[in-house]
Amino acid sequence: MTVNHAEITQRIAAIAPRMATHAVACDEARQVVSENMRAMIDTGMFRIPQPARVGGYELSLRTFGAAVTALSRACSSSGWVLTVMGAHHWCLALFSAQAQDEVFGDGRDGLVAGTLSWQGHAVAVDGGYRVNGRWQFASGIDHAEWVMLGCADPQSHNPRVHVVVPVGDLEIDDTWYVMGLQGSGSKDVLAHDLFVPAHRAVDTRELFSGTSPNATLHHTNLYRLSAEAMLCMSVSTAVLGSAQFALDQFIERTKGRKVILTGASKAEHVPTQIR
Image (cartoon, rainbow, N blue to C red; front, side):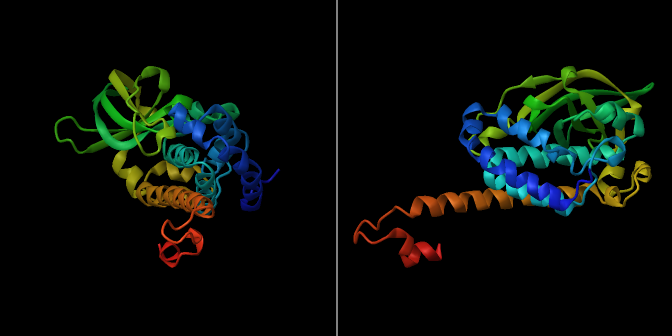
């Protein structure tokens, strides 16, 4: 079956109402609940920006952005996790073929959490890198199999490499007690003298400038875009969907409200409409 924009739109329409019923449960659990995560996995939402050579749909960023907006409108936490993890699946296209096969080979979903800011450090050693540090805001970490981390040079503090590592190699610190995006589960992760083989690393400058030689592994120009441009698009679509969610909630609540002084309908109150 060929998966295209129209097919993704139909799948979203099928799962969004169900996911909306679990939005409060995500906040209470401080992570995306299994019902919503399973709905997104089963309908291939994380495969939208994933390379076709490893089982992804390799669809446009327009399609990915539309999916993130629609699902953020149903459940802001779920939409945020989709945009963050999906962005990492896009970034994996710029890693080596061996790394892509390790994460997504044999039809695996992979599910890559992490953070692209270079908060930790990497030192070059024989065959790879020694990685140490703490990274904040690993959205979706509770459901991840792999984690992508940005690493700086410990001397200059300039960006050096991005690495992808199994989640089991890291320590997870549950710091996520917050007011906003409570259900995204964006906890801290720590690496302690972790060895990462060279094939699971990519030069940060190449990743963020769109010049990784691994882009030639794919048949489209989708992965010749800079990661910086891709991230600006994906994050903004999550914010847009969350804003639409807030507006939907405001309209629904306002339908039954009254102006205190007059008893008139709040929904028909001109200042309310202007706001």
